[in-house]
Image (cartoon, rainbow, N blue to C red; front, top):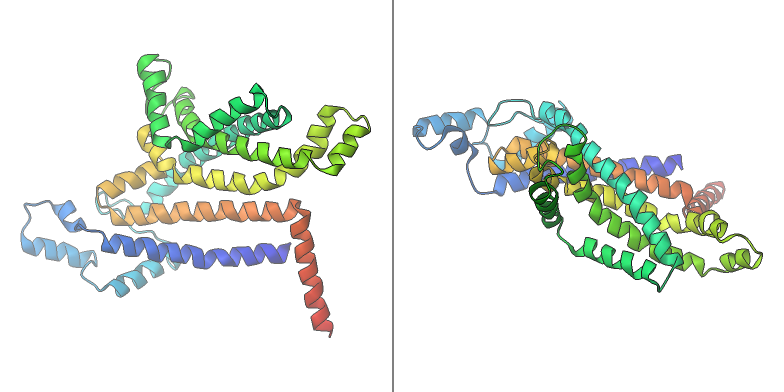
Length: 321
């Protein structure tokens, strides 16, 4: 298990470096001149050239890429914002707690609602308790997240006036963003839980437990659910990562000053260091989430354990030979 964890951590290094190179290249190729955005259209030509040289934008691509990688991974510096002059690291770490809070709470809500819906649908297959959650799940999977967020604003803020439409404040400001972020996860969890439960409920050991007169509640929650949860672990990691990735839309719509909102604002203003730093930070969070998902999967799934045990035994046998 320790060897597997170490191997997975090593695999993250080329992934994160690859993301760094990719986002830097995209920002290099994107049309537009950040110098023009900073100075405006009234500056003299020599002022453009002077600022471009001071910012290092007149150097070749490979030189700028090498300098950026050294700056990020050697000096642990994401650079400074072109427009505000503030450290990108300071901005991101100041906003990251809001993004993490929104992502983890939305994931938690999607679990505590989606999993019971899926269990209830599987237990009552073919009834109204089955097709109604499936209809909601189909709606949640197919509906664009930004459209659902806007509909929440129209209904609960504009029409009913129950909740604020945007901004930061008390708990009431978090309700609509969390509902928006969790809805897709609720649909995914409900569908996957139903499918996993139906597969497990048809196994011989479930039939045997029922034939022995075990209460149905114990059959469902002590025997069926633990085995049905194994495929859900991978899905949970994907949902959490998807919420972080889609957080920029949620944060923008509800004006939550998180990393996603900061990144969208930086894109509109051609603030390249801010965009690169935001994407890099979200990619690191995404990679950590998927790493933890793999480690949990390896810890709870006996098939993964057996696979690594057989590999270890084979290597030991080859070494002895």
